[in-house]
Structures are given as structure tokens and as C-alpha cells.
Length: 323
Image 1 (tube, rainbow, N blue to C red):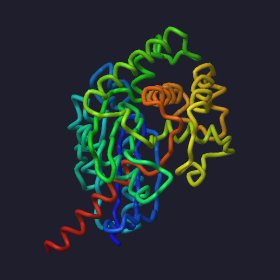
Image 2: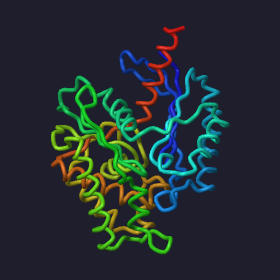
Image 3: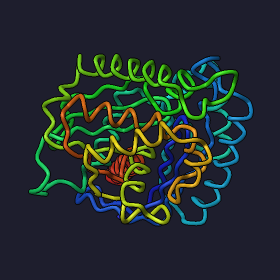
Image 4: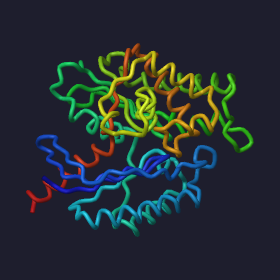
């Protein structure tokens, strides 16, 4: 087993996983897994730059994570940055700040690399299950983008498109600097049209409709699962590998898009940082299910973060052999 630390810095959240990993068997034992909402992508879709306050929130989380990584003694640290930092003209400020705090340079990965890591993390545990038919379609609904990957034991095709929950909220549900609460029918129609156009784009390279099992990742999907199960609080064990039917996803999405900020915030399993963006995220999930005719989504708590950890462990093992 190799002890590694993986950091996934997305548009809405930054997450840490410190784990003991056996890349040969796919076994991964969590030592510490946590998430902080930092909204790194605040305003990026409009300005093209990372806001100073968003950078500082992210660096504050990095300082907390650095202390945990040191305490647990990870052999290798890998920091991956996704949609927001790809799009920002001042991403060098972000890179320098992370390097100063954690001692590693963040890898600003492409959408294709993001898709492959998500697929690895989501499907490592599914191999050999008779109740889940292949090929899988893994969808990772992030803050700025959504990744689509179709594969069996390996990736066949992947694509990243810009329909994350934060981006859709900022693009369609904000008026006069505030989120419309609840959104108007016209706003929802425009957002839906944007999502459908992005799905058309994804289908140019990824055979979405060939999938036999839909696997959904990240906070929008896990929150929908928590709501579907009426959980009194967010419960990772109850959510991981849960299944949510299409009818239930549609019901929850319609309810979220009708509700006010206060009503969404009162949902027991709702993270405060997702209150304003969960409606958009749920609509992305619902639109995907309708596009491919999925009767259910299998929800995974293991995603790109686990994929980063597996890759870091493999790299550490190769380094030992090379030495």
C-alpha cells in the first residue's frame, strides 16, 4: 500500500483525499476525505479571471490541507485543477499560490484528462458486478463543466462540456447580481436549451446512448440522492452506490426549481454552498437521463479524487521500481 494525498480543485469546491492505495488490486482505504466550498470559479464565465477573494478562499483551504497531509505523512501529493483554472487568464497567480503552500505545482488538466480520471475513480469498484451492465456512462457534473465518459474496463471516449451547476446558474439564473429565487419559466427554458446544445456537442464524440449503466458523480448528483432518500443529514455510506430512478430525479428537479433559497436551505442534507446552484445541477442530471433514456442513475461518492489517488500511487510505485 502507498500513502498518497490527492487534491481536486474544481470550480465550486476543493477536496482532499489522503488514502492508502494498492493500485494492483484497486483497494483504496480512506484516512481523511474532506471538501470545502471555495467558489474558485466565481465570475470566471463573465470576466475570464479568478477573483482575488476566490483565490484567497482557495489558498486558505490549501493551508488547512497542507497541515493534514503533513500530519498523515503522505508519500506523494498530486494536485489537479479543473474547469475554472483552465478558463482563467490569471491562472499563473493560482499556480504560484498553491506551489508556495503545498510544495507541488497544480496540474491544470484538460477536459479529456479530467474525464479519464473520473472514470477510473468511479468504476474501479464496479468491476465484476453482475447487476450493472457495461458499457458505463460516467457523468461528473461539476461547477463549471460536466465530463462524459463511456467505457467498459477502459475509456472508449470522453468529452468535457461547459454545463456545470455554477456556470449554468451564473449564466441563466442571475439578474442584477442576485440569483432569481425561484427562477422564472423563461430562465429555466433558456438553461435547458443551453444544456441540450452541450449534450449535442458531447454526442459528437461520445456514444452516450450506447451506455447500459449511468454512473453519476459529484455534489449535484450526491445531493439529489440524499434528497431522494430523505436523509436527516448527509451520509456518505447511504449515498455511495445508491440508485435513484428517473421519476424521482424529475420530481426532485422540478421541486428544487420551484423552491426558494430558504426552502432549499432547509433540506437537512443540503450543503450551504450548494443551495443556490443545486437546481441547475439537478437539471443537468435530468437532461442527461432523458437524452439517453436512463431509468436510473447509480450514484458514486468515488470520482476524480479517487482517480487522482490511484494515479499518484501508480506513479509512486513506478518511481520506487525505477530507483
